[in-house]
Image (cartoon, rainbow, N blue to C red; front, side, top):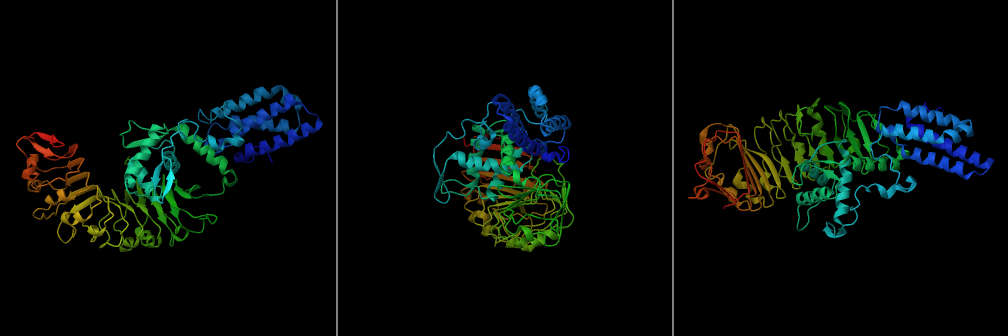
Length: 534
């Protein structure tokens, strides 16, 4: 075949021709010096064999050089190969440098036929730490083992993506990489993993305390290069409209602007899909029985994970939600920011293994299932910024594994049957955000019960009403609270918000280490604010 017929096979075809020519040259007589030049050519070709998979620009110059070398080899033109080898190799390297990252060629590397262990060579410290930690199931792993497993998982995000810590940790939980231990929650394990990756110079951010990070480009390129070499025999076989199927574990990445899930053009080669992840789709459609090939799905990230409002996502119809009841293995469901979802069907409550349900910023969402008490595994329920949400489901207080509850609405007694005092039963709850709605009916002592939330570390209270009467809610803060956020507070003085015992002679006493106040009508702070009670 011509070297230009299929650019994806250009280098493999050239390598095959090189091996044939090399064999024939050897038959004509052994020339060690010339054979070393051919070997040098083979090594350089191997180093660029994935180049056309990763880039689409500046490839003509490289193809011209490869075609020239191919013709010399096919014609067994020893003179041109012998005299021009250095120049041809240099041109190949120069052209490839225009296509590859700076680490694409590494003269110090050994023969890439044995490159399997070099994927992490950018961090020489990676395998040095050997302090053992206990991991669920009575197995022992080094911290690096868990961290590197989680790092591989992050390849589902596009190159140069800025990743929020919380999104990454939720993904790891959904994929089963993090599980609660006796001493640490999944969130704490996730924080430890991210800290390790920072220390090992595998990810970067503004600081260790930043809530966003990026995989270092050089690290990502090495990992992707390894995957391409490891799975070269499958290359090009699993592209389907709008979706790229990736191994380890098998994932569907939704990349095209418009994607339709389900149908006859879905072919997975008998492979089990564990994750569906939306990387770039803005318009999602679903054919009937779209879940048929996804019965073992654990992560369904249809919503956005980017911070920018430019990443608009909408669905053609919300009927697809009714089929999710068949996804019995689902652990993580994100519909974050998706437009044209008006209601979550009651069948959503049948997802008994679901750990994380994220409907944040679903601006059209008006109703949740009437009762979610059957979702016993749920640890994260994220409903923030759902401005049209009318009420809360029954049974939240029965979800005793709940650790994160965001967007709890306080409205009428009919629309919000679960009140703050009922949530005291959630002994594991560490993060809570409350929204006081426009129809809020406040019970006596409603917010006093917060002091009984023994595990609560982060609390946010926001007001959707501007009436000053809603400022007098008599909040009593729990002792373990680390962070308090008040949003759109309708009162003029913070003293109105807290229980009298919280307001001492020296000032307003906060047990939390951090206090954030955004928006609202606050005019003065007559009392000094004592953070941490000091």
